[in-house]
Length: 445
Image 1 (spheres, rainbow, N blue to C red):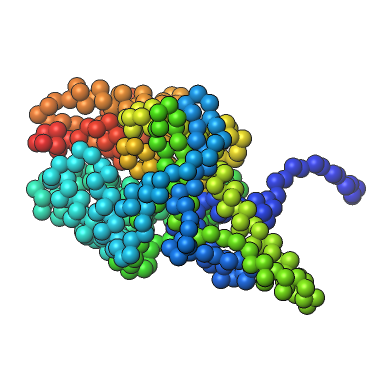
Image 2: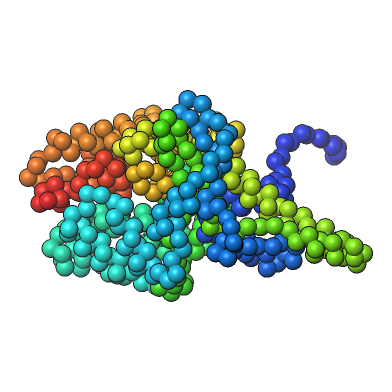
């Protein structure tokens, strides 16, 4: 038996501590970042955190730059103190989840009086986990309508914040999260829908054999599922904040102004007096180095987050200018990968930058994720754009029997017959974006 030693070269990406923390900070919304900053301050004696509500002087909005339609400038712009609506920007002193959800209803247009009553009833029928605690059939019977009508409104409720609201069970709660994540591994949906027990048992080999995929792919999918947000256990009536848009975009003459909202985040500085004490104590050398490094990472991470969000907003204005003029009806197909390639960043970085963040425009406040629409792979293996699918959907509705309008489920089946595989929930979403009412309202509204 002959022994041999072989060498090979392998390129591996190892994330530095600095990059890991920067990515962690980037993914936080304004509310989450505020909590993170305060937690860090409690751990690190070098950090001084000044709450914005007690600062003597501070700018509520930090304008990083203004940009022109044709060319972007790096000039700084000082906004008016009350540029953001107080209702949108202030943290609520005491608001229940029920009130929070009801406040999101007006953001959705073309809802009939019956729709509003049903949607309100669904919100009021959530349990402590924010799961729906009433049968669809009972709601349909109560409001003398169809199950599909109620299902469509439940689909709408499930697009509200917080993510997962309106789920009927744990599986649906997880699937709602997956549905909003373009980076979810290939087999995630099937694993949750059909084999959540095997995922919980970490039956890697069994899953690999059943789905005829690699062990590596199964492990990646299982790890992803375990990283999803767990079911809420707190009382749904706890105090929650209003949605705070991280970015505001407005038109001023020929200029697009981009403003990052930093006014409601604490100011983070380093305590120079405490630095001198620790620095001159020979027994605290290692402790001083560790705490100083941690403090600098936090400050640099916040600055990097601001820079990334600004660059992202600047590019969105350029790529989706019609959206900022007209709203959702003018949005163009755009993927996370498209933006990542232009900015020279990894797609996961853009995903973190978009997660849980909002942008304020002249026609409303939107989740950043709303600006990203992906094409859909049809049965022939080609990619259909969202605009093409919407066009087909609109044609089906225009050609329907006006006495018996097509339900979203029927439209889903008709599109499927044409090779376009999308869910009923997606059909409802596209229909609403085109300001087309539900089949119930088209028949009786």
